[in-house]
Image 1 (cartoon, rainbow, N blue to C red):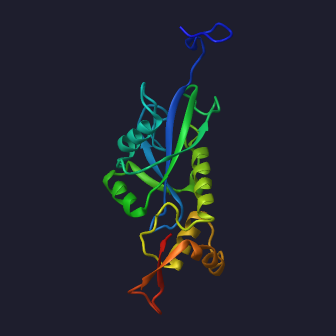
Image 2 (image 1 turned 135 degrees about the horizontal axis):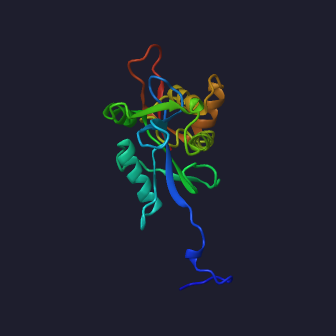
Image 3 (image 1 turned 180 degrees about the horizontal axis):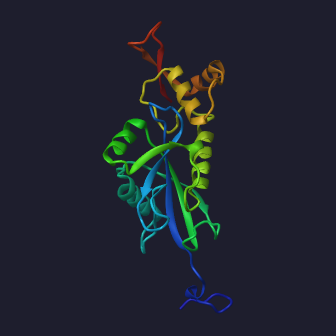
Length: 221
């Protein structure tokens, strides 16, 4: 049996439980604010509450497998959702059930894919604006804040990197999406256009069925 320089085996050290928690972000059509998917907790701990979908890591399981399992079983999300690792939350006091490390993940899902999940959940799943989420158990508020900041940083310099918009789209549609993600309205459309145009391909098409002059349609480079 392996022993370290102090003569201890691995089993001589206390070990935390490991959990995975995932912030799945979206922008609803009917409330264009960056929002996060929440599930209703029905277990004995703390009664019925809303939280992020998560689970404990099973023996022999990778983090990626545990994340996919939790999203499928807790939220009804299909395997094509591709979360990425965000941060390890390791405050020993973050979970009142015991010493639990949370390997947090983040994913972004277009509203057209999120809406059927909510409709099929029977009220067990909902979305809430990230800036309104407060008081969730297990330090999930901190995970949501970091996930939102991470996503917003990606949207500062690239046009819709999470592909929440269907292509092709107009500059104005892209601008509205970025306003929703970044959580602020009214930043300059002209400045936004100058920043994003070099990162877009102009198509041969223009918008249809809109009031006024049809707008140029674009796709991401």
